[in-house]
Amino acid sequence: MSPSNSTATAAARGEPPGGVSGGISGGTSGSDGKGVRRADAVDERLGIYRLGRPYLRKVFPDHWSFMLGEIALYSFITLLLTGVFLTFFFHPSSEQVVYDGSYVPLQHVQMSQAYKSTLDISFDIRGGLMIRQIHHWAALIFIAALFVHMFRHFFTGSFRKPREINWLFGFVLLVLALLNGFAGYSLPDDLLSGTGLRIADGVVLAIPVVGTYLQFFLFGGEFPGDQVIPRLFTLHVLLVPALMVGLVTIHLILVFYHKHTQFPGPGRTENNVVGAPFVPVYLAKAGGFFFLVFGATALLGGLVQINPIWSYGPYHPAQVSAGSQPDWYLGFLEGALRIMPNWEIDAWGHTLSLNILLPAVIVPGIMFTLIAAYPWIEAWITGDDREHHLLDRPRNMPVRTGLGVAWIAAYGVLWVCGANDIIATHFHLSLNTITWAGRIAFFVAPVIAYQVTVRWAKGLQLRDRDKLVHGRETGMVKKLPDGGFVEVHAPLDAEERHRLTAHEQYEPLALAPPVDHNGVARRTTLGRRLRVGLSRWYFADQVRKPSAESVSVPGPSAESAVLAGPSPESALVAGPSPAGEPARDDGPDA
Image (cartoon, rainbow, N blue to C red):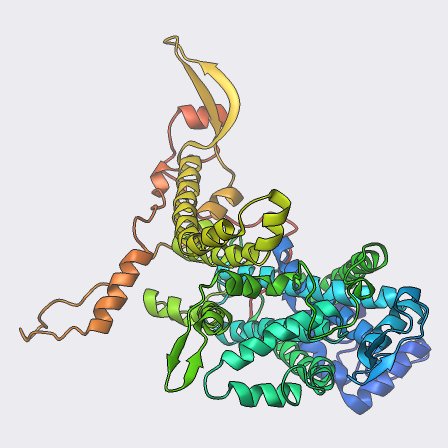
């Protein structure tokens, strides 16, 4: 073998030239530059290349929806970078001082150190206001991206085995992000954030038995206390970010370990990944996308004002800011509190505030617990315990898609109700009417959303079936010999046929025969009957894929293929992928 062929073979295996497997190269040569020699020296001592080599050529599929998780990751990085800057100048103290800074309308006003330092960051620290606003916008984008990213996983079924634990890690990240967002916008101690803390105090007190103990622990006494700002600061900049960094790291490691999911297509199976290698293609794309996300967030921070705390003034327990609204991601909690009837239970000298406990603790607890447990709920209903690496099209799992849309509808109703006073004043409507409409819609809207989504998904399946059997409409009308007219349909190409037929057809679970092979009556438990009933509901009225003989395939011409009838040799699965196919990872994961 010639030296050039040997080098090419080694490169194809991901090995360094010369066949040496330890370090970046077998040794330093005179032709190597200083950068290569220094990299060799580092690798000889740390073994970074040897450890990372199996992952440098890791194949990642390409789809626009995969960027949603990247937006969340890059927003989180932006939060960490801007948060470090803000930490240098923020004073987490409730100690009262008199303001004498540059913002004239608040001069000689008594306020906390926390509020004063936030004003100083906004008006006296060079670039402080822009960094503070980038930080706030990044938080909003981060949580929005987390929600959309999780729903992408939900609707495509990528939470299934073996990724249930990673789904749970993502859910915990979302909860921590909500908690940290609330702690962050409560730190400035302005009138708006203080109103939010007052609501949080009421929620804590509504928890039976331990509510008062939790309040004293969080606030350092009865509200407003003097310890809540320092303790929220510790949570916001130390404890919660450390947990989130650890969870993000584990989350990404598991993505590498399990291999990335991919949508069905030619050459894509449950045992391979078709896409681009991590280095250099995916890494270059990811790096460029990071700067796009950071740049868009910086533009928002520099051009779009958010949370102008100087307009609200410092917090005072006797005052409430008119039209108070939390950041968007906690609007659902505000709405639940606003539409809840004033229910209380008095027993044994104690009052149980259901008007706060139900909407602020129990309802969100149920909604978010269902999200966390859904991978195991679906697996139990369907009886599917296989590994899945190919994604579902949402239309092909109508019940799952309907349940997801129903959850979004319930969340959306609560979110809108969080602004019932603003809606009433701006549209000159009755606040009482809006509140009752929200109460009714919370129960009715998810049911309607579920029914519409399921029917819509099944309608799209029928449309796909029709396209497979008859081909796509071309807009051309042909006159037949008998004088009639017919629209010419062009058969789908192999890739499109594969995309429309790659999904599985599930069968619902069934009860075992009433007697076994020995004639002994079987005992069927209530749990088994419930599971079979739910399985039948989950897979009811499935739209079956057409048979291979009924699918139109391209012939000598589009017109002759359709008008002559289907070909008996037609196949549902696409053939080999065309020349120049992307990189594939067909082996087991390292």
